[in-house]
Amino acid sequence: MRLLIQRVKRASVTIEGTERHEIGQGMCVFIGVTHGDNEANADWLAEKMAGLRIFEDAAGKINLSLSDINGDVLLVSQFSLYASCAKGRRPGFSYAAKPDEAERLYDYFVAKVKAMGIHGVECGKFGANMEVEIINDGPLTFIVDSI
Image (cartoon, rainbow, N blue to C red; front, side, top):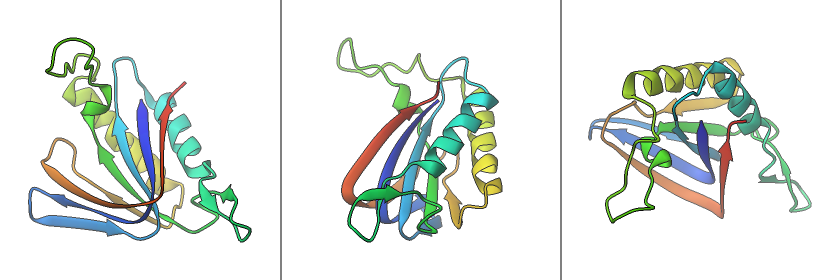
């Protein structure tokens, strides 16, 4: 699994032009699933994400985690995190997991994050057409791959 994490002042997702979810300060996290990923990968990434110290403390040092600031998180599935642009001009998606397996692990990851007691957890909808609005803070963006 792969996470693309952005520190945000606020973010929102609009699903299929109708349903809207938004968060305040925290993280917007895009989630990609590849072949062979499993629940252990999702568990490790959820813990890593929640504990990642990417927020500033009183001294201005990047030293606080999502929990430390009581921040929110917006979780959005994104199969294109496993796109390959190595050949030609059209991205290939053979590294992305099959939709059924990817959706299962995305749902598992969302449930895991919600069970961790993070302040505000909002989500996109797997496989839907979504518009994501992000006010990136920093800007700070991190890619975290599962072990």
